[in-house]
Length: 115
Image 1 (tube, rainbow, N blue to C red):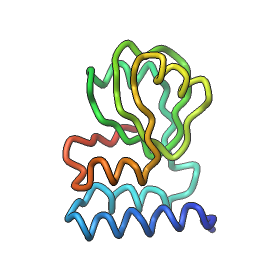
Image 2 (spheres, rainbow, N blue to C red):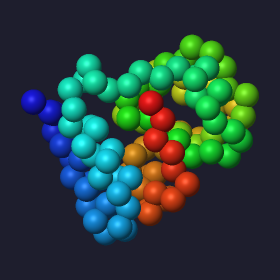
Image 3 (cartoon, rainbow, N blue to C red):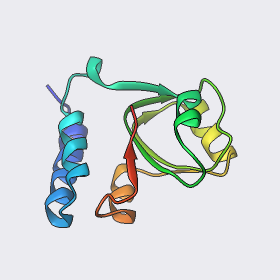
């Protein structure tokens, strides 16, 4: 069973999806309810290879610090390691909480789901 934090996040994502007519938030809500074994684990090497400077990324899983990031990105995820967070910030990027991501990109336009 999902914990209260996840259920609160799902509720917020679904509300944002309806309010802003943004299916991306609904999709992330459904991914959040899946079992932890089905959530993605993505390392910085993969993110670096699949993104370019200025991209906005949401990873529905955990981000690990393996590898380096050579450009700035705006990033949000369900979980991120301390090492990965340091490397994202050192590259000039930003890490946003999911609700800050919704506030900054209400329609989800320009946000990529990676993982």
